[in-house]
Image (cartoon, rainbow, N blue to C red; front, side, top):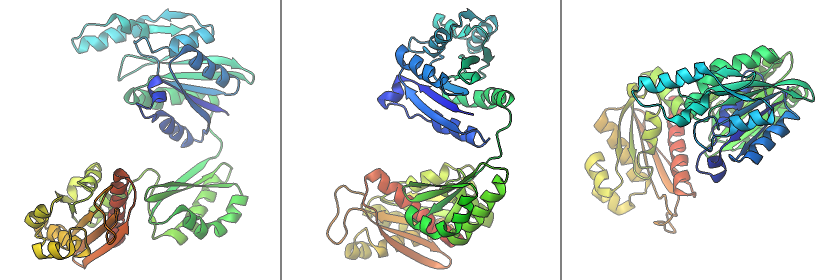
Length: 414
């Protein structure tokens, strides 16, 4: 079964909007055993959209388009596909009534332009939009391999995602049946590069690869995802055996599975242990606190964050001694230590993380170049301080420093 995704929108091509649809849809389909074979993004012009759909029809069994179903002049996907498939558009009274009801509930007049969303290609199945006015559409097409299915989804994620899960996906499984035996597992690691990771596990994975296991590595700043995929009658046992090998060699580096982030893993572990956390941030400017508080349930474990960017703030709020600052400078092991210990003492938290460094691009010296950072962890067991050199742009520096700080805490918790 060949699946293609076509994302429409000139804003995607201009770089003003991040295309999250392709990643989300590929993930939803792959988790159910359907693998996308091709995905493209095109602008809102007629030649681009019709050419992309025409090409996909020549190859694919299932085509999913996103965007271009709204009421404005640049929403052309519905009309252009109807023209390409030679399916006349007709107004659907039920859709029109839903659009009028949508605005009526909000006590707003119905813009004339929205009525175009009630136009449906002949023979199409309507996918109701519970979160907006643009319905989705599903329509058969004839290809070289037989009858295929083309699904048109609206662009806004809050409309697209429930529509796909609740309406489009059941159509896919009904039309194409259950996917062949498929199993996919992602192990998330931190503190090890992808080359070193592969060296540790590759020898033992060889026999499993010969039996049909596919191994992938996805490296990002500060972490590497290890992916196992199998498509065969023994897919799940094969993947589980690979997981055991990975756990044996990489146990100290694995922090989670699938989409779980390091911040979520930390919150989960602290909750299990009934322990609390405080933060003292300088160079990261509250970035670590932002990551922690993005996780549901963080209030159960998170005491406070003190963003002490200046020396005066470090003294006033954390009790860092002036003589320590004068002798060693703000970016130093002694200051990081006193920041962590001060945060723990003043908040009563079980653990306190502190970071102080030079994000750049200026401010470095031969002794302390740009990218120098000290990370401290204070707990009942004492205080540990790590020194790292993260020579990246400011945003990457902050993220990597936050990863290193959370990983220091993760190791203490495990």
